[in-house]
Image (cartoon, rainbow, N blue to C red; front, top):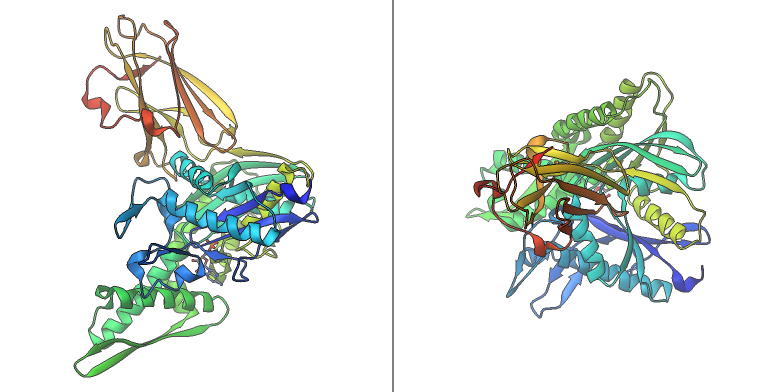
Length: 505
Ligand code: AMP
């Protein structure tokens, strides 16, 4: 494939984003216009309506925090708006600005127009979040060839070219989330076996926990609660992140912020020393949850003892020594006495973008084909007339795939049914169902309850995006929806309206 057809791989991160491409058979990170390998996923709107993205936007976080938006990825797929001046922006629009920036600097770096991209997403991302990412990619001017799950990207970065034959745990802890993936890897065949994780464990949680400690220490000393002062709190958060990063390589660090506040007696400086031990105790509850989540992921798959032989670390937060220690000791405990290879020779900030570039290289024909089987990370199904969840595609199914279930009406002479598509929560918690949407199948011929035959079909494409169709087998009426077209959505709780429920046959 010639240089003019380069496909880039993009890691659209919570904290930072970056892109890579294949150069002479190897992934290479694309350098941004400021000479940096990573670009902060931060957007700032200036008074004159111009937009800053990346480092320049991050620099505005303290002085202009109301017009600076961070952690956009944690809001993807949600129906929220960020008001800025006269306008407001959706997470899709904001992510598109970041992706557009990446497109522009990649084109400049490579000297050619770039159209095609692979974009990575967390494995736990639900359908709404995937759709939102895809839309952001399109809005930024990309043809998105594949939404690639981040742990697979990390495995590709390590596996391709090394001819591994291993059973791997991929532990990806970034700014906002934890993704745990078990997979096996033989020659050019990757198979995901189990997935788990949490959307509430990540570097941002550590920064906040450390900031709370600093606030507490300051309050003990001066009886002033700085949390009520947004500018002071922003500064503490930023310094806490820096201190956290320092503590990955030194045993002790100091947060010193001069003139953080003032009383009638004069200015006050914030000066708090933190040891690595203290930081570890501050994040201990997260480490404990991490252990539990690894165990839960292991339990999804019946493993022989000593089955696991490798751990791949991805995400900036895996540089924290106690995170690595916790993961390795948990695996050793679960896995018996087998030897464990720990891979972290690829920069954990870059491993996902490198993997995305490898898939891009495979798609462009520059690299040798590989086969990979990924699995769904949620149960997918519909709600029946009793409000129970009926699974149509269970968590852990390889995709692309298609499953069908037969339903009927719940009442005599029911003329329509409402199909309410649901996805289980991140950790398979039944109470955490996410509504992906509802649609109506009408014109059912009058019949007794239980007589009509309604076939509900779910299919999942290569992006792990779902299409749903309902067919009235008696009349042939078909209603087909892609979850992307929100125009078919009905709002409100259909169970409040009688006579529209579905019953499983
Ligand atoms: P990612 O989403 O993979 O870019 O990870 C970003 C997160 O990793 C942020 O919360 C960073 O503060 C954190 N991080 C980056 N480097 C380090 C480090 N050396 N020690 C601890 N955390 C880090």
